[in-house]
Image (cartoon, rainbow, N blue to C red; front, side, top):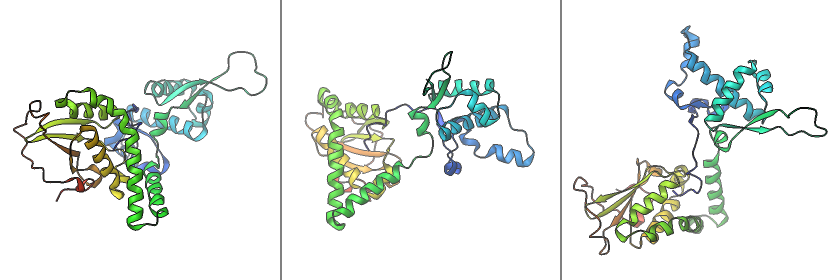
Length: 293
């Protein structure tokens, strides 16, 4: 699904599902270990220096989240570490885009010397902690549905919202699609989607092309409200100037959101079929957001 901020670069962080409730942040290199440090502690096995460094770095980031922008001295006092150790962790977190240094605000008369430097979480660093965006989106859509009276009227209201949302966002892709040659418009749309974080690709099919989105930022909301997928399919059709067919969606258990674009007279000479693709395209626009039978 289309999301205007999805293309933003994220730091190399991984939030363990086991630790969601307390918001502990884990580096990507730690993700496969799970609770390795805890198990090692209970069994008497030594914990590697790398694991210990990552764990302490997580504590530094968490302390800034809990207490707000902090100086190295304040962090050292709270975490019972030396200021030199804290500064090393802050340097690494800053290099990863998790924190950023700022000048500390001084209220009242400023003393002599330069003000202390504080470290604050960046937007990307804050996003690495547990968020509730999925629940917020579903709650908002449920409110729209219920406010319209529920039933068919409620579903229509959600669909109207989804179309309005996608129509605005699609304007960012229209220029790239319309500037491309007729035979390369699917590739242009895939490139525009990838720039927004969808990891989209376009590939040849026996009688057309397939637009594949390997990431869906609103998959949980779309699982409950397929109108989001249906509106996206309609926008793709409008942008490409042809009827398209949604074959699969991440929201309903598929690995990739796949949309089939049939070959037209204007693109037939430009699109080359991939002989290795044998999947038939029997889905219709009405199956958008649902697995093909």
